[in-house]
Image (spheres, rainbow, N blue to C red):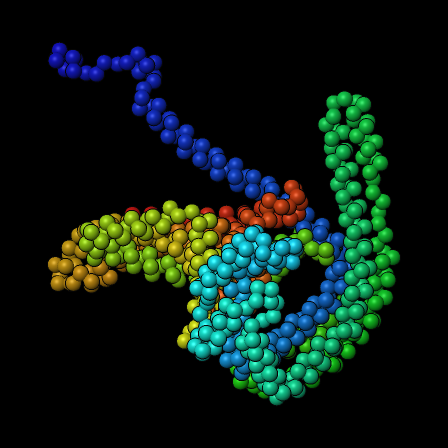
Length: 635
C-alpha cells in the first residue's frame, strides 16, 4: 500500500477503538425500539388474557346460581309469556299502522301544525315564563323590570316567528292563520292555537272512522293479550320466591370470597399476631350454607300449575290466527301481519314443548364450563346490572358492528378506490394538488367531532329528508330514530375513505410502468389500460387497502358510541332494508360505555375484557390478511 493510500484511510476515533460508533448507536436505538414494540404487544396480550379468561369460571358460577335458585325454571314460562307479549305488540303495531296509514294526510297536517307551535314555544318559553312569573309576583304591573322582560319576550317572539319549520301539507292560508294566532297569542295563554286543536280533532275523527272496519281485529288482539294473564300472575309469584333464594346464595358467595381473601392474606403475613387476627376474622366470616332444598321443593309444587297455564294459553290462542284479517291495505301493516303469521307456528310449537321442559328440568344438573362459553358466543342478550339475571351474549353487539361495517364499506370502497384511480390515472396535476390533501385532511378530523356532526347535523338532516313525500318509496322512510346503523355507517365510511384512498393509490403506483406502456403500444386507450391492465395488476394492494379500511371501521369507538343509538338488541331483519335505520350497539361501544362503571374484578368487568380479546383477534386477523396481500403484490 502506498503512502498516499495510507494517508487517505479514515482515522479511528477513540470510541471506535473501544467498539463504539455512531452507526452502531443508531442501529441499537432502532433495534431496541422494535424490541420494545414487541414486548409491549406481548404484555398487552398477556394482560387481556389474564383479565379476560377469568370471566368464564365466574360466569359459570352465575349460571349455576341461576339454575340452583330456580330462576332458570321460571324463565321456561317467562320465555313464552314474553313471546306472547311481543306478538301482541306486533299485532297492535299492524292495527295502528293500518289506521294511521289511511289517516296519513290528517296525521301529517296535525304533526306539522304541532311541530310549528312547539318550535315557537321552545324558543320563547324561557322568556315567556319570566314574564308570567313576574307579572304574578310583582305588586306594580308597570315596573321597570317587567317592562324589560316584555321587551325581551317580544324580541324573542320575532326571532322565533322568523325561523319556523316548513309545513308542506298545510295550505298557505292555514299556515298564515296559525302564525297570526301565535303572534297575537296572550303571553299567559296555556291553550293550543285553534288550528292545532282543530287538526288534532280532525285526526282523532279520522282514526275513529278508519277503526270501525277493524273492530274484529281489535277484539281479537285484546282477547289474545288477556289470554296470558293467568301465566303472568304465576310467573310473578314464582319470581318473588326465586329472587329471595338467589340473594341468599349470592350473599353466601360474597362471604366465602371474603374468607378466602383473608386466608390468603394470613398466609402471606409475616407477623404472628397479624396472622392469627386474619385467621380469626376468616373463621368469623364463614358463611352458613343457604337453604336451597326447601324453596326448590315449593317451586316444584307449582309445576302442575305451570303446565295447566301453558295448556290454557295454547288452547285460547290456537284459533286466534284464523280470526285475524287475511290482508291489510297499508304496506307496513301488511308486513307486520305477515311477521305475526310467520312467527305464530313457532309460538305454538314452543307452547307445546314447554310442559315436557317443565317436567324435565332439574335444579341440581351440573353447569359445565362449555355452557358459559357457548352462552357468551351464541347468546342473544347482553343484560347487565339487572335485578333478575345478568346475561353476556355477544351476538347483539357483533351484529351491530357487522351491519355498521357493511354500510361503511358499501360507501367507502367505491368512493376510496374510485378517487385513487382517478387521481392516479386521469387527474391533472392541479386536480391532484386539490383532491389528495382534502381527502387526507379528513383523517385528521377527531372522531368525537365527527360524532357531534352526526348527532347535530347529519342525523337530523337525514331524518328530515326521510319525511319528504317523494322519498316514501325508500324502505325505512320516514326514519324514526336519527341515531341508527345507517348514520353511523356513513360517518365511518368518511373516516375509512382516506385509508382506502392512500393505500389504493400506493398499490396503483407500484404497478410497473411497463405494463401501461405495453398496453398503449398495442393500441389500448387510457381507459382500457387503466381498468384492464393497471387496476387488475394492483388488485392485491387494493384488497389490502379495503381490509385495512375494514379494520379501521371495526375498531372505531367514539363515532359508534355517539351515533349508533346504543340499543343492545339484534336488529329486526324481518324489516328488510329498513333494518339499516334501526339503532344498535357495537363491540367497541360497549367497552367504552361500561368499563368505567363496573366494579373492578367483577364478572361484568372481565366480560368486557373478553369482548376486547375478541376485537383484538378480529383486527389482528384483518391486518394479517392485509399484510399477506401486500407481500403478494410485492412479489
